[in-house]
Length: 331
Image 1 (tube, helix red, strand yellow):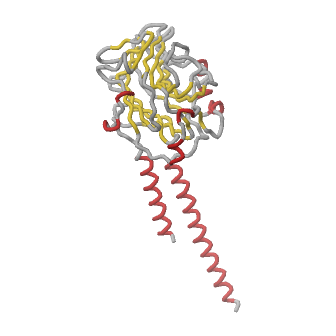
Image 2 (cartoon, helix red, strand yellow; image 1 turned 180 degrees about the horizontal axis):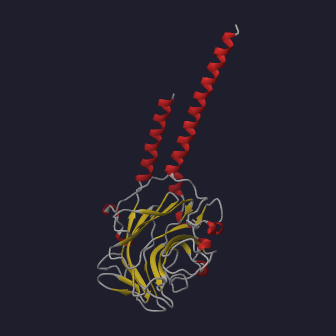
């Protein structure tokens, strides 16, 4: 019984692992969607990509803001994206002359309903409809000393929420992580994956050529037909915020007939959580403790439950056998 149970558990592990890894593109150029990608020498700027504010397009990078005070810049894909499952890889660089804690403010990656227009949220308007990934380099909330900056966080909005700069967006974030992204002499990358209502944000900023998970949360619903983009802002403090490339890959994922027949353009951006994002303010990790279980956690839970049943069965059998032996002595 124990041997069969362990075999079943191992089979379940293989199936779950297979399900997880089938969605990873690993930068496969076969699935690269060029109409939604921004790469050197940026020939799509002016046709498939538009920009505004202080944005400067060169042959080597797209600089959203220079290392100057009170600048805002943005660039966005004018072609709406109708992919249900996708993964965006962003090669970026944040650098400047400011010393520790004397730089700002950061930049944001967007998948939103409309184009980017000047506003208070890292150079974009507020409120917005869609998804935002914030790479915040300056701490505004002096009481939030349980996390270090720069800090990367995610937010989904249907137009009903405002980004709270004073609290560094903590009241509306879905999760996040600290990452040293400024003045690195090596390349820095960020990846955003959306598949099967699951949002995953990963970083590669330590020159190890490997992704490190930053955000992983299920129950995220995003419509198709939105636009990708990036924006940045400086205030009294400043930095150069450069985008070297944004590459979008299509994830080859099968959907049920019901999902295929659904009008994904009518979906409202939302997140199904076990608690409000506002309850996340006391979580020092910045992660959402009430988020649905990931695949490996489900496997561990099932394995523990399975082992528990096996142990209870063995103990029950031993107790029953001892009682049988005891009864025989009285006859």
